[in-house]
Each structure stands twice: as C-alpha cells, then as structure tokens.
Length: 264
Image (cartoon, rainbow, N blue to C red):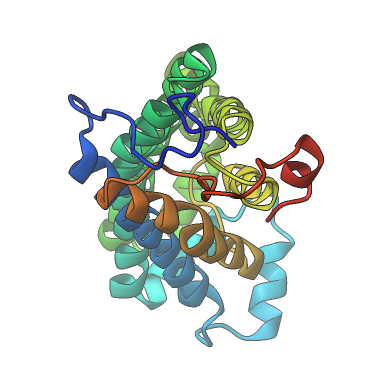
C-alpha cells in the first residue's frame, strides 16, 4: 500500500498546516465522537433508565413522533436530559474540525471527494445546530408552561419546527449522509480506512437527524464502536505525526485489492 503521498512505505502524515492543523484536527477526531457518544448514551438513559413504566414507554412509542417522550424525559430528569443534548451538540460542533482533518488526509489522493464530502458533512452538522436550538426551546417551554401545555404546543407545530424555515435545516441534514459516504469512499480508496472501519463509519453516518429524537441502544453501540475503532486511532496517528492507514513494512509485500477489500 502506498502512502498518502504516493511513496511506498512512507509513514509520514500529510501536511495539515492551516485549518484545522495537526493538533486541533487530531484532538477533535478523538474528543468529538466521545462527546457525541456520551450524549447519545445519556439521552437513552434519560428515557429508558427507569423513570417510566413499560406501559408509559409503549404509549410514547405509539405516537407518530418521539417529541412526547423526549419532553417527558426532560420533565423527569432535567439535568440528565440537558447534559445529553449539550454533550451531543458539543460533539457535533467538534466534528467540524474532525472531518476537516479527515478530508485533509484524503485530499492528496482524492481532492474532489474530500472537498465535496467535507462541505456536505459540515452542512449536515450545521443543520444539527438548528435542531439543538429547537430542542432547547422545547425544554424551556416545559419549564415555563408545564409538560402538558408544552407537549401540546410542540406537537401542534412539530412539522414546521422540525423542517425549519424554507426547509433549509431539513435539507442540510442530508448533507451528513452524502458527505460521510463521499469521505468514506475517499478514505477507503486512499488507504486511510480499511473495509471494516469504512463500513463502521458509514453506519455511524446513518444516524437520524432532526428535532427531539430518541437514542436507541443500537445508536449508542454504533457511536461507541466508531469512536473507539475509527475516529480515535485516526486522531492518535495524526497527533503522533504518522500517516493514517497502514504503511508497508520493509520486505513486506504491498496489499492487494482483494486483501484490502476484506481487511478490518
């Protein structure tokens, strides 16, 4: 396998001068997915950590949207629900320099995939900031009006709140899915990520977008696996100044297309 510079066996990281820089980009790749994962876990626990009976949970699941459940979870555990949404939003913000760093290491081989993918992912993350603002406003309604009136108000306007003015936020959400796909393809083709880790990145990028959404155990598991097996190793190698991906050792045969396809 050649390095990102196209020199066989090279283990040097590409130049990350400028935005985001080696230290900021590497640190963001490690920290952002952990915050993202922590937010999802707390969001799951706020709803399904024992505050509600099975009958109440089934009633929530019977609703067309999970806004009722998320508002009820906030009313029952405001500190946990607030922490969940705050950590998730912080992770989303830090993912901007994280994905910028990933794009920078993909760009020497596939500049168009890197640029288009990074742009689309950032647009998707900006859409998530809109959703975070709506979530915070909905929680404030619970504090001011009480759970019942707040839930009725949110449900009456949920579609308009979720889609946003002129449908701009909901359109931006799709940038995450397309952008992660493009970056995953570029990272795999350039040798930055193996097949298994590329598939895990794609699963991570398929997470729901929108307002007052529920986190499931599957969401938490995928986020944890991606943080530990995709983002953290990549960030650690960048911080150490080593090229992401596996360099060819002296005397070792380069990886074939078939071996790369089945690699983890």
